[in-house]
Length: 427
Image (tube, rainbow, N blue to C red; front, side, top):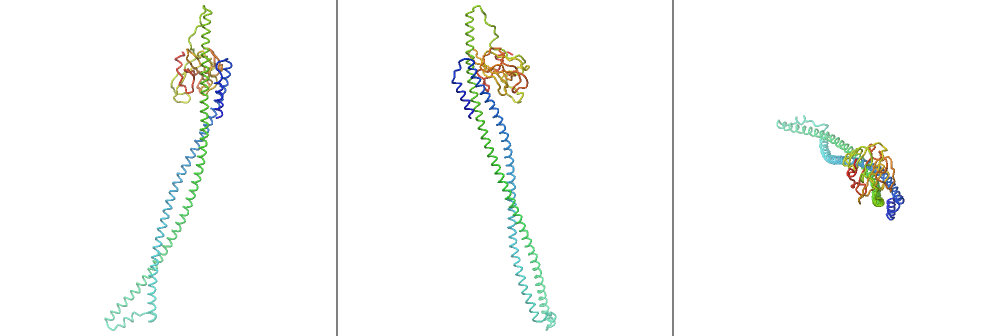
């Protein structure tokens, strides 16, 4: 931001001073602006490098965030599965508790029946002890008074014996069933304890997963905060760069207007001088001229004006000039009378010269790119055919050639003023 205001200050001072004066004084002011342009070009390249570095860091952080999101989704899935397992275990525990309650009721009933039969059996034993060591069913039968009495006694004895055997059998069956049901209860209780143990493990696992998820979320939020700060810094620096570029372009345009005015005045001076010379020497003939424009360099036209696939970037772009291929060091001359408005390095142009011309009240700007040598300086007045540099291979170039552009009016970075050089120059 400070650098931008420094540039604005220089432009303001330059605009305040008069542009009509000695060529040397004007060139000195232009050289100061030229130095400022170079410094801004260096600053721009540094910012581009910083922006690229930060963009790479942002991509790495975004990839890391994406990885964290995948981990979080996986944890969410595991937590859902764990919750489902917990619900199943809880349902099993509840069902087991219900079965245990039912078994307890069954055991209580069996114990009651066994206890009641024990009372009956004890009474039978006590009755036999009162009558003797044992009851003799044979004595009962032989004591019959008649055959009918014998049949009655036999039926009664059979009934008593069957009753005793049935009581004993059911007593033994109930005792056996009681043992089985007790074992079943013990097994259910053991399974319940195992289920509880599994539930505790599941709970512990769930808590551990929740803790891990919380840590990942904290880390993710920290990464997001870092990313936000880096983006903010990047946007601020980029905004400052755009502002500096805008101010710089305004300065270049303003300077080109000044140079155009100087070129117009120079043309007017030459015209008046020629008229005065013709008036003072009525017998003298004017110099022979081939026109306002001339070819800027000898060589083979390797690429014309118009849309093409860029030989380096492999994308379809508009070629805003005509390329003349030749060996490095081939002389490059000014295509017309004018004033040098830029001479130095500029991005893809490499070493480049810009000359502003005035012709019949119209302003033109010619551009000479990819030079190997620059022989002029900003503010210098040049005639048509004056050597200004040498053909080269600097900047974005695949081989030695001159990139020549013609602009109606002043040169602009976006290039809408560029026209086909063949409209004015014969190659």
